[in-house]
Structures are given as C-alpha cells and as structure tokens.
Image 1 (tube, helix red, strand yellow):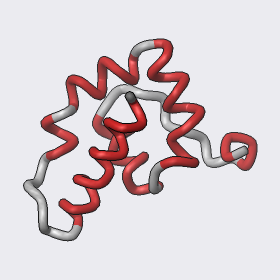
Image 2 (cartoon, helix red, strand yellow; image 1 turned 30 degrees about the vertical axis):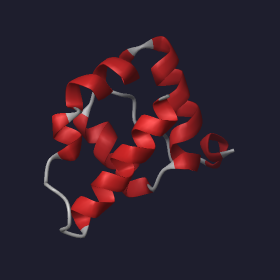
Image 3 (spheres, rainbow, N blue to C red; image 1 turned 90 degrees about the vertical axis):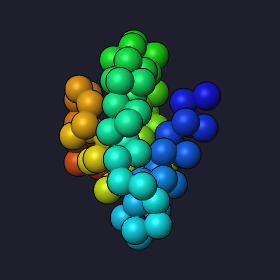
Image 4 (tube, one colour; image 1 turned 135 degrees about the vertical axis):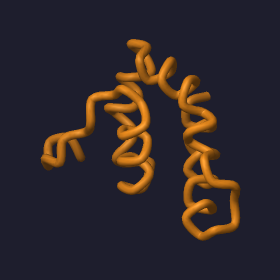
Length: 79
C-alpha cells in the first residue's frame, strides 16, 4: 500500500515540477506521510525501499517535509 501511495505522490511531484499539476501535493499529504513514516513499519520500509524505488529529488523532498531520518549516501545503503 505504501508503494502505491508513494508512487502516485512521486508522479504528482514530478508533474508539479513540469508545471502541469497543482503546487503543494506533498504539503497537502504531509500529515499522512508523517504518520506513515514515523511508524516502525513505515520507517523501515522507507529506509529499505526509497533509494531504489524513487528519484533522488523526490526522496529529498519527502525527507525535507516530514520528520524522517535522511538516507545516507553510502554504497552500503544503496545495496
């Protein structure tokens, strides 16, 4: 379910960047994202899946919006 939600949000995020979507998609979803990524399962899923599944721009946008530990830029985390 998280993958479906974040895939839709990433699509909207990139559409915003292109100017074809309403600004603020992530901001509107901030409380839902915060609750999900603050949960033990949500934070573990994000740490495991974010870098492989989503663009770096989207990952940075999510991590700057919600209280989540930013992913490290080491090769170990990418594996």
